[in-house]
Image (cartoon, rainbow, N blue to C red; front, side, top):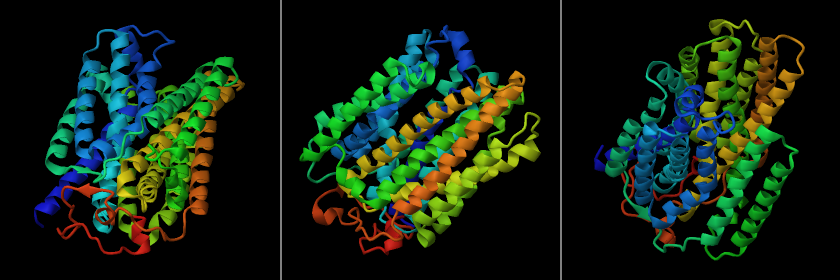
Length: 502
């Protein structure tokens, strides 16, 4: 197939591994938290920072991380971020004090904020359409969906059999694979006219997003009507409003507002927000249900997510085979409603549920739907985006997903706690009722996302793909073109409207 084809295959390894690593670390520590608390002396009040330190820096710096790749070169930024992530993982695994682990997790999130958007931008810039682009989007979706499921699985197994430190150290071999793949499979690409970095916009959006996420976390833990929570939201909204005004007037904005004039981009981000709310709730509440209601051990609870991994692969393959034929709009509807059906099925679990009769079915249905959704969402979110803004568009999608997961989970945790506290039965029955309510609401969120996507996304894309014309308008010049599935250079011919969304 030629050297260019081999280069494409290596780039696909980068896309999958990068997204897998980022998603893995979001869910990897959940089951290990009690062991981490005992090992490093975290208090009940500060244990949440093991999760939230990562979450805050990841969410806050996503837009800046994506733009850095556009400005300074995607290969260079990706290599630096992966090295930083590996060093932070090593520090986390060797930490002897609580503050060290918190700081290391924050640095992991900072590095992930560059890794994730650059991975999706590689697809946007280097692959113009056809089966290879569909396969790349499938692998990007696979990395996100499987990383989240594998994180829950590995968290239980590693904690029980090897100790909590391996929950952090398991990243190192993945980082090594990713570094090798980047060095051998990614050619540098940068804008021919390198835009100036919008420092003012970067400071505003990073501060605003961090305060917004902090407000959500504070609302979950201390009450949504508490004065300090309300103040965080007021400051966050005010700063983000100023950010929008600055971007509107900036000659080279960090986030071009014209991205949202593309219906495909807008619809994909709305869907991504609600998808993450449902998906993260599914992982979180099903994991709690298995351990606190059905009395599964951490290892067994992790192993129970294996069918979810298998179903996700099935969904990704379905989407990959049908993306060009059906388009993102139809696949988002099918995938979103299927995933919502699986979450609704989970909501009907009883406190005496058996795995093969009541857990296996919803696991497969939910995961197939989410697998289909990830591919279609990535395709729509980058449809027709200029190559110079590829990293930014990718970062916007990741920001929408991260914000949706944070807000959705916080709201659903509050709803579950309210139902549990007002339940008249014993504690197990009360917990089951709370978790079921949260899963039902997660199903509603995902179904709403599917319907919104259908309303907002165009039936067929009429937007030109600026990525394909990057060399003509001087907006982006890769050092070398990527190959399509026949080993030739990236196709510069006009692509059919349906394929532009792919």
